[in-house]
Amino acid sequence: MPEANTAGKDEVPAGEPAGEPAEERRPEGEKEENGDSKVVVQAPGPEEVEFVHPEGGWGWIVMLAAMWCNGSVFGIQNAFGILFLSLLREFGSENDEDLRFRTAWVGSLSMGMIFFCSPIVSVFTDVLGCRITAVGGAAVGLVGLLASSFVTSLGPMYFTYGIVFACGCSFAYQPSLVILGHYFKKRLGLVNGIVTAGSSIFTITLPFLLSGLLEKVGLQNTMRVLCILMFVLMLAGFTYKPLLPVKSSNTSTGSHCPPMNRIFNINIWKSLGYRIWAFGIPAALYGYFVPYVHLMKHVEERFGPDASKEVLLMCIGITSGVGRLIFGRVADYVNGVNKVYLQVTSFFVIGLMSMMIPLCHIFGGLIAVCLLMGLFDGCFICIMAPIAFELVGAEDVSQAIGFLLGLMSVPMTVGPPIAGFLRDRLGNYDVAFYLAGIPPIIGGAVLCLIPWVEARRKNREKEEALSRDQEVNQKMIEHEKAQGDTQCKTGESVL
Image (tube, rainbow, N blue to C red; front, side, top):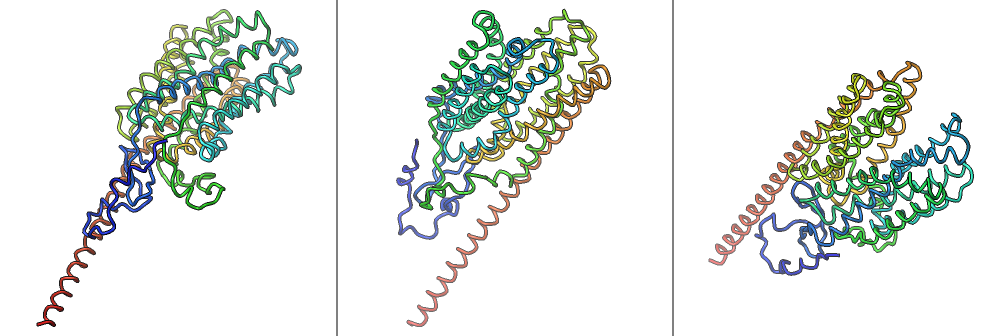
């Protein structure tokens, strides 16, 4: 870990005159600007040393490890549809509607728990660090998946797969986003794009592997093969070597208990920009995932059971991966919180494409819609972490991401069932898709406020800093004038 002991070379001697410029005498604990994000680095001396991101080196190994994490976690989650049919055959019949409903909840519970646990994961990440949290989470996920392979009825699957495995995945996933900010700043968008593209690669390839395994070795042995992915994920977590220096306030108390701000960091909620972001993203997601859940059933109802539904999933998966790489790189050239405009664009496009689905009466039109949806889905996902770094800084980003993912779990869980309810009442998915396009557009409009709010905050901080400097200079002038008057009076008395 790079230490701040280099500050000793630049420390000001004790006898330095008081006329030193105000900007060189930063009080301990003050935040330094690092581009558009604020990184606080505590030094043992009176000065602070700006942390320099390596922008490579061991960071590339960390990037590959984080990419494996995203791929294995969401690849397995997104491939639950393949396991779903095998679970039905294992525990009953594919035609049992009640069993289908109960089995579907295993996958839904698992995906929801990954995001629902995120606020808790962020606390563990702040207290224990990225490495311990990720390795421990992968180990728990491995145990949960291995236990699921020995289950002989559906009931225990809710616990082993839906809770234990999912919680382990959650603890392994979030540190993979946080650790990237220790190694990259200028390339953070590109690196996040590559990392999040891992889930697209696994989502495209894993179903083919699972189909072959299920046919040859059965459900239980297939789950045991998937445990290999979790074991490699556990090893990958050991690469998460932290670089950002720890705040001195966390260690200066002499107590073994972590301070309250590491357990519940209220600093992130003091940022109006973050509060808007934490409201706008979940608001948009009430309709965001409806097409991903119900599109296949809609295609079957409109174009018949022989329609190539899998082609649409392939289109979304491939273009989502491409979008993460493209927009991740584009985000590196967008200054500060203006990256939010990329998310705004992605929500607008996805909302409009959702409304276009019922209007597509030819299969080619649906393919075009899915290509655009996948492309901008990749845009939305790959720049979440870079925006969090810009809004709250590297010190507070863990809980900022954690609370956002936790808030996202509610609309992700509620939105698709509402769409299914509308379909059952109205007989088709048309109204459900029209309504699903509204929340992303509203959420995107809310996010447009963030750059304006952040610009006002920065202007206010500059004015306050200028006012403080002027006040310091005025006091220095008055002090020098008082010293001059004293010397004059002393000279007159001597005469």
